[in-house]
Image 1 (spheres, rainbow, N blue to C red):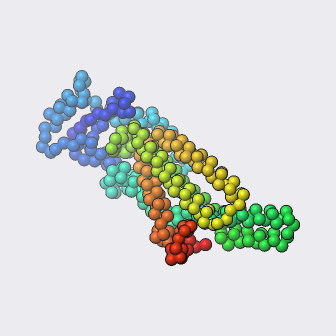
Image 2: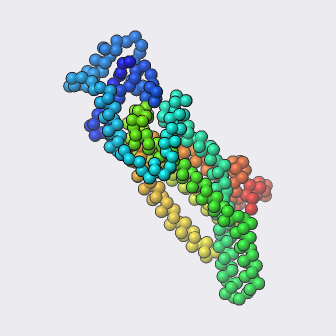
Image 3: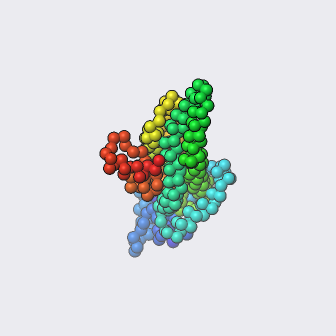
Amino acid sequence: MQHVWASRTFLGSGATRCYGVLANGNSKRGISTFVGKPSGTDTKHSVNTEESELYEGRDALPSTGECYESLYALIEEHNGTTKGILQKMLPVEFMRDVLTSIHDATDLSWAATITMLTLSLKVCFVPLWAMGERARRNNAHLVPIALELQEKLKEAQKSGNVKQAMEIQRALYKQMTRKKFLQGAALQLLAAGTQGLTFAWVYGGLKMFAIEPRYCPGFVLEHPMWLESLALPDPYYIFPATLCILMTLIYEMNRRTAEQMRKSSGAMSAAMLEQEVRQTKMKYFTRAAIAVFAYFSCNMTSGTFFYLIPSFVFQSILRYASQGVGVAKILKLPIPAPQKVTKMENRHFQKVKGF
């Protein structure tokens, strides 16, 4: 079994790492072939040619073990060799085994395997996401009404009008129970918590490939596109920048939808005006938080972004589509009716709105 060698420079540091690649195909763990040899060529002559081109001034090519150990040492230096909190709390070894089994069964690249698993999970979570989004929009519509009723209740109590205060309390109670305000808040927490836990689980499993690079050499040797390795960061920060753009896009769509749902209630009060001011401040805080997360994601392994970026692309497409009437009807999502519409359009939107 002959080996073909290549060298690349990592992060412009001048440190050269080598890849020992099997010229006749993939290994059991999926070591990908970086440099192929046509059948029938003189292997000895080819190796000598590459030696003269890639290793000028060197006496001999490094051995397979030397190249592998050099790469492993670089990965372990960046990622460490001890498990973090996520690896200790979650069954990340199981996630790593699942990824390995899917990769071996499909014979896809590791990047394609991670992307396929990500999209499969996102499709499975669409009903749960729809429940949380439905509750979020309902609550955004009900909050101004509840604040207006609370303000009227305070005025009635100050004036001593007991009958009016009791009527307002009854209406407020109906808003909180019949419209399932509290249940909606719980559903939002459930949907957000499930997706957050799934990300932590997948991230922990991918991190295990970097913490223990010798477990699966094919993963650490794969370097799609401009990347150095799936177990090393993006050297040009293209993935973190893309992630920042996608997160900002999704947040702006969420904020715009929530704002439209609040305005669709038609309720206005002093407390609601104060909340609008807080929402404006929260907008800038959230944008800054997204930028900070993107900055810290620069140290994440490249393999993690093959989960994050497809996930946020899927999420952005789903959120954009759910603003339309067709997808909203399928997912049973309330949408705000436009302020100026014809009678026919108003009836069309009222069917979807559901209030």
